[in-house]
Image 1 (cartoon, rainbow, N blue to C red):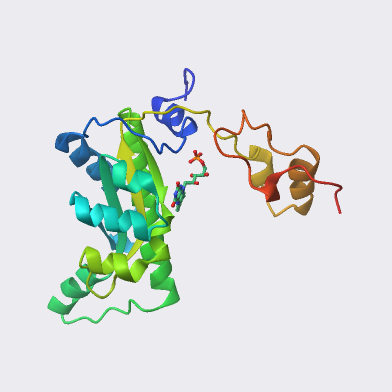
Image 2 (image 1 turned 90 degrees about the vertical axis):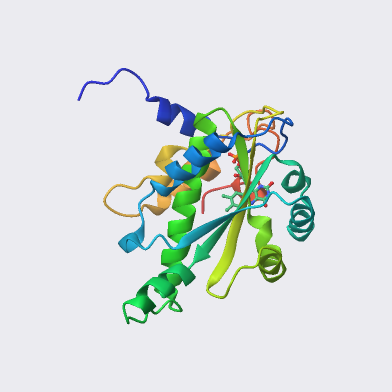
Length: 227
Ligand SMILES: Cc1cc2nc3c(=O)[nH]c(=O)nc-3n(C[C@H](O)[C@H](O)[C@H](O)COP(=O)(O)O)c2cc1C
């Protein structure tokens, strides 16, 4: 196959950086609809689509969730806040109608729900970024999953995995450099020496400027000898 350079999709993906400050411009519902449709395009284990998204527009609910998610101001201020939930309730309803009982409370099905939801959410973020929006995951919702579930009335068998802020970026910072591809890509078997060669000796780019607004956590910094 002949190709000319990187695809637009790859450029969007390699350009990702979390955005935590937004202009007051809204995201039109039509864009949001397309973003969610794109999210649903993600593959789904056994096609269970074990997820639901809560769009939180109510100011009061948003404030409460921001506080419960570790007091993160951007949760309150972003134009769009989505709560991504693992949802086995819908499937239970559907299978009940067929007289079949699903076993949702197994580790395997827990993983299925989490993976389905995460793949779908990442599609949403990539789709939003491809339209010029920026966003940020909010794992902080898992600090208080019970209280947040009550605020948005999640039934049993549905739980919040993470939130996502979306909006028009009001800040730009550099893409945080990832580990080198060679550090995470192993051929035909895991190679322990990769870890030392690429992290301790070469290390990822560690200057503050290159790493973007936030610093690398200590465990990725260049530190000492290979052992
Ligand atoms: C599942 C998940 C949860 C996250 N939770 C938060 C969060 O609660 N608050 C926040 O500001 N950033 C959160 N982030 C964003 C990460 O801090 C960010 O993706 C990481 O530092 C890499 O930076 P980048 O996204 O700009 O490349 C989360 C990211 C993921 C994938």
